[in-house]
Amino acid sequence: MNKRLVLCALAACASSFLAVAAARAHESHGAPKAATEPIREQQPWGIAGDARNARRTIRIDMGDDMRFSPSRIQLRQGETVRFVVQNKGKVMHEMVIGTRQALDEHAALMQKFPNMEHDEPHMAHVSPGKRGELVWTFNRAGSFDFACLIPGHYQAGMVGRIDVIASKEVNR
Image (cartoon, rainbow, N blue to C red; front, side):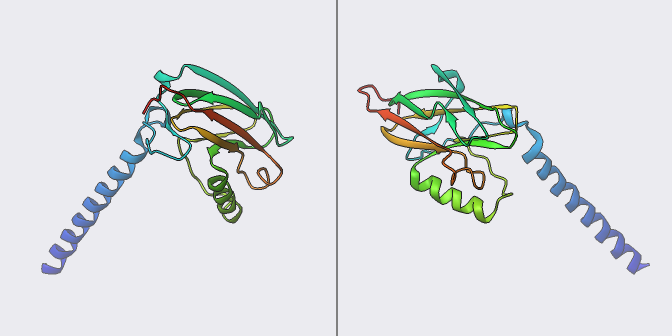
């Protein structure tokens, strides 16, 4: 009888543990992506923007010719921009904003782990025929790049440039 009581107690503890673990897992996946707030972490090329502050929308096309159109963008420091990224190709493409060094490092990682899932506020992964968005605040002046880091695309020259001109009025 004692043995049965111990087994029942262990089973109850195990099921409680599993219920708590399942609830925590559900919490982290419970909110749809669009409803979750991006992590606002300062990067050398800016910070995640608030869509309500976007005063400009820039449409960018991506294609299987491994090009962005437009491939060069000029902004003023402090601008919050909504990028609407259209994949006109038949394969997956993405737009990732960063410094050349950050993009080189990320591209090398993607070559090693091509199926790695990742999502940051400075990137938009777009399926063929679909569109994606990202909102970014360029609170630092300088020249930055954007690229498709799907293995082989970056190496084929799928890169663009963003020139951020210093402004007297800076949003910090």
